[in-house]
Amino acid sequence: MRSIYIIATCLLIGTGIGCSKQLDKKPIGQLTEEDVQSNPQIGTITSFVNRSYQTLANTLNVLGGNWDWTGGTVFRPDIILQDIASADMQKKWNPDGDQAWIDEFSSFSFTADNPGFRGQWSFSYEGIARINKAISYLTDEALITRLSMDQTLRNRMLGEVLFLRAYYYFELVNYWGDVPLILTPLTNFQQAYEVAKRAPAAEVWAQIVKDLGEAKNLLPNTKYADNTDKWRVSKGAVIAMQAKVALFQERWNDVITLVNELETTGFYHLNANYFDNFAVAKEYADQEVIFSYNHVTGQVPANGNGLCAIMDWGFMAPTANFLAAFEANDPRLLYTVNTTAQASYKILGETNTGNKGNEQSPSNKVLIRFADVLLWKAEAYNEINNPAAAIALINQVRQRARTTVTATGGTAPAGTLPDRNVSATDKATVKNWLMQERRVELGFESHRFLDLKRWKTAKSFLTGIGRNFQDRHYLYPVPQIEIDRSGGTMAQNADY
Image (tube, rainbow, N blue to C red; front, side, top):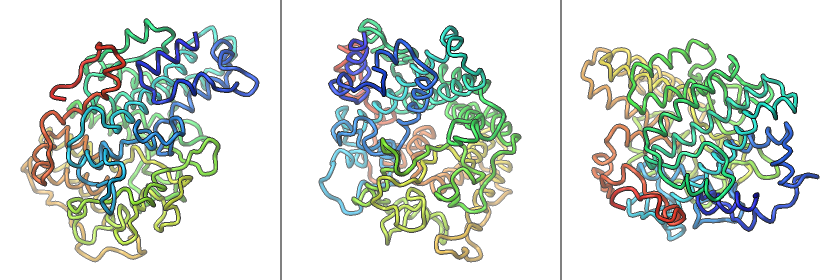
C-alpha cells in the first residue's frame, strides 16, 4: 500500500520529490515508514505538523535536495511569481543567461512548462499532503484515546494545520483559479485519479473559509499559541488570514470587523522602527509580525534562509520602476534594497551584508504583519466610501516610516513622507495613495502581483511600463506536467 500511495502522489499530485528516493528511504530511527503509518505515536503526529510548515521556507532544496532547477524547487518560487512578475524585481543585477526561465516572468513570455509554476505547485501540494496526514491523525478519536493525547495539544496542532491548509490553498486559488481540492490522504490509485481534476474556485474559497473558521476555535486566546515555539500559527494569524480572504473576496465590512477583532486582542502594533519587522535580533520580540516562517541556522536538515545565498549569486535586483516608486528620503528604500551593496537588508535580517551568501542565515520570512493588515482595513474603508478613515490608516503607516531610524542610524529630514490630505474625498485618489503605500511598505515581501491582479490593474500598469501582460495572465497556466499526469482529466487555463 505504501508504494501505491507514493507512486500515485508522485504521478498525479506532483509533490516534486523523486519517487525512487521516497521508496528507498531508510527507517525513521528504529521505526520503518510502515510502522509510522500503522502505529503512529504523538511524536509522529508532531512531526507531520512541524513538517507542514517546511514548504513555506526559503531554505534551499527543501524538496529533495538535488538542485532541481528544472523542477523549480531550488528555492520557493513565490518571489518569482510575485515580485518579478509585478516588475518590482528582476532576476539579477547583471543580466545573463543563467536560469532564463525566471526572466520569462519579467517578459510574460512563459509557457505552461516553466519551472516556476511546477515549483510553486509542488511546494503547495507537498505541504497539503503533509497537512492532510496530520489531520487524519488528529481527528482519529480512537488514536487520540489510545495515545492519551492532551486535548489542548491536540486542538492547538489541529488549528495550526487547518490554518496552513487554508494558506496553501489561498496561494493556489489566486495563482490558478480552479485547482484540485485534496482534503484527505491518498491511499490508492483510484483516489489519486479521482482528485486529479480541478475543483471550482468557489469551492476552494469555501474550504479556505471553513478551515480558518475551525482553526480559530481551536487555538488559544494568546499572542503565541506556544510560548516555547513562538513561530507556530496563532489565533491572531488566523484572524488576520480571515481578513485577507475577505479582502480578496471584496467583503469590505468583514475586513473591517475582522481587523477590529485583531486589534482588540492588543497583541499587535506598528513597531516604532520599520526594520524591527525583519531584524534577526528582534524575532518574536517585536509587536508587528503576526506570522512568519522561522529560519534557524545550523540545523540538520538545513533550515536557513536560502535567499541570502542566492543574493550573493547576483539574484534579486530591483527594477528602475520600483526604485522610482519611493518618495524622497523614504527610510524604507534602503532597508528594502541597498543598490551599492546589491543587497536587501529586510531579507538578510541585518543592516549589513554579513548574511549575504549564507544559505544558513537565521533571518525569518515574514508572511503577515500588522502594517499590511492596517492597509487592508484602509482599503476596505475607502471601498465603503469612508475615505477619512482610510486616509488616517495610510497616514499611520507613513508616520511610522518617516520617523523610523534610518539604515545609516540617522533620521529622515523634515518634510519626508508628509501626511496625505485628510480632507480628500475622491475615492480614486485615495486608492492610488493606498496602492502606492502598499508597494513601498511591502516591497520584496511577495505581495505585489496578487495586489495588481485583485485591483484589476495588472494589465494597465504592466503594459504601461512595456511588459507583455495579456488578459490570460490574470491566471497562471497549470504546470504542463500536471496536465499530462492527469491523463486528460485536468484542463488547462484558457489561452495557454
